[in-house]
Picture 1: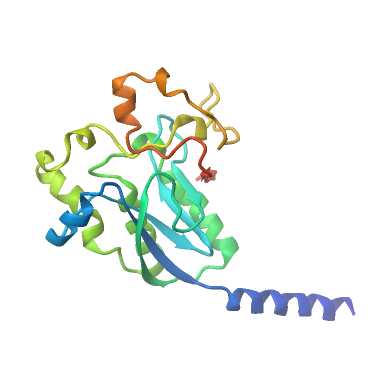
Picture 2: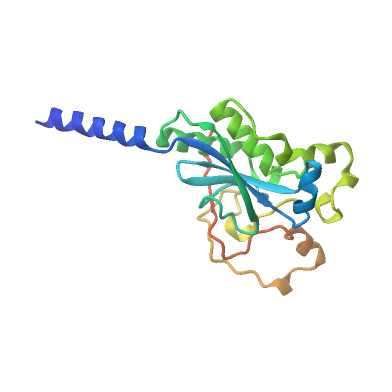
Length: 219
């Protein structure tokens, strides 16, 4: 009886996995209203997240040498305006395999390594897409970064010196550099920031948003 039950549970689990939506989707967001005009010229300032198994994964900057990869509900990344979704392919990993995969990838994307031109959120989604489906994201999503690598004057002044940042309260960091439980309820008084800090957080999601950072696994 026990053997039959085990076999039945395994078959049921296999059916549940087969019935799950395995599509990999790129969700694209506008960072500025200017995109409505610049998109006609083939570029814009975009944020993107990769949606797999009902959650969306993105990459943001903070000041600590720990994971900058976070997850949110699809099409609702805080601080940005949702534009569109682009199907990229299908994932062949099971949900548990994918979770292990994204936790491992998180060790390659620390918040303090974020760079607007060479390692931004769109580089992250392109990398994940390549690994999962064998193809990258559409070129127009990250075209401004490629242009900016050639000529930084093409970027707005406020973007040349900063990155798309998550507020540090999302990632509480102990003195030894390890991350503790993240908090989505931390509030930061605006008057506590000087002009430089306001520039850094110009593109940050509000502190009350539901953002959960992925805990990286040791490599």
